[in-house]
Length: 93
Ligand SMILES: [Zn+2]
Image (tube, rainbow, N blue to C red; front, side, top):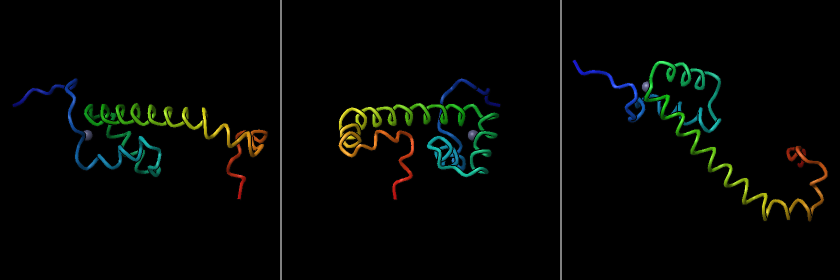
């Protein structure tokens, strides 16, 4: 019998990888997300994987948001005057 090392980081379960990735990036469906979260609750390796994925994605998103806001995005918004309607970019058709 091998002892279980719950703190030991490792690859997530093969069949869970896709669910975990979609859950982390927000593209998971309700079932996929529930399945990944339910599994992570009892599987430290998948939980760690999910945590890291979220952290990485969050950092990437923040970096992207920063660069977009700092130059292009802000300038485009200023130029087009759409900064007045903040928060509803989906209304453009
Ligand atoms: Zn797992």
